[in-house]
Amino acid sequence: MERWKKMLEGILAMGLLCGLLTGCGGRAQNPSGGKKADPPQLPEKVAALKLGDRELPVYTFTGADLPSFFEGCFAVTGEAIYGLAKKDLANDKYEWQLLRFPYEGGRIDDGKKIAVMGNDQMTTNGKEVFFWARTEKNKGDLLGIAQGEQVSLVPRKQGEAQFRSVYGTDIAYFMAKSALQRGKLDIQGFSAAKVLLSRADIARMKAERNLESPHLMAADADGFYVRWLNKHGSRQGKNWTYSLHTYDPEGKELRVLELNQPIPQASHNHLGQVVTTRQYLGILGTFNKDKKLTGCIRLYDRKTGAYVTDLELSQIPDSHLIRNLMADGEDHLFFQVGFDKAAKSQLYRLDF
Image 1 (cartoon, rainbow, N blue to C red):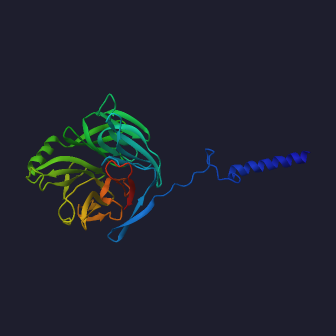
Image 2: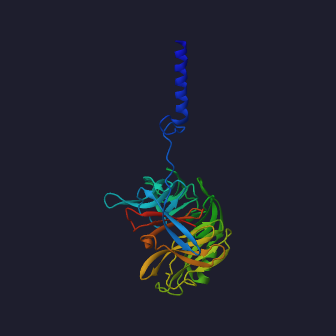
Image 3: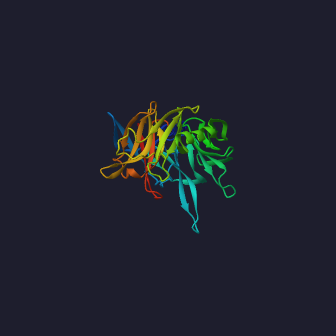
């Protein structure tokens, strides 16, 4: 009997060891006790764009449908996609909702509303997403900070309007009280602000260079980028053009990109959203090819400002409907394609 008892104890011990090591006949176990997760599905390569002697791969995502986010209100972090979408309510009312869609690899999971936005300003440092928020009691004087699904609200301290974070840092540039400033932007809001372009500086540029309507478009480790409208002496919109002015972190103007020279005449004199990679400054636009509108990303050398090329997106279906473009600081460009207010759009990633 004693021998049988020892044999049974040995068998049970072996079974327990087998279960701990391999799951014995099943899949290996993870520390939480569930089945080991499958590796994340990678984005699917759908195109390759020519840039000189290089090919830039374009990937698409699967899973949940993304709505066509409001133009320019789009952010991607390492774990989720955020965007502004209009939601129709009862009695002809509506609200602008901040939606969050988690993703892993190339698959997007179902999204949810996490806040109500007050206007069309949004930026991210790669971890938090910052936006103008509104509540029933406060219609627009709040800075919203999204950390995953959690949203905190802090007062707008200095009347900040347009703002752009430098990806991967707590540095941000913003327009406030008709002046352009640099400061710190984190979960406490804006702080340590320093004026780079004063109201007097901006007024002088308007008067001396016939420029109007400055708009902060982007920021990176090299400085910030402001779009100006040049009316060329016309009051009726004829021959109006946009120029992009690049500044160093202290507000010194480095160069001006005039978009109609020496760019091919077939290209539109259009300045859309602005992004930067390690080597390039990219501007979203369209141009007319064979009497058909085609989306493009206009590339300049980031260090010299020299025009490089219009990177055609004709391999991408409906590329003239690109709505949003953003960079993640690692030479990945994310962009959406879809009609305005459409219930479904396609998300792509272009790798440099």
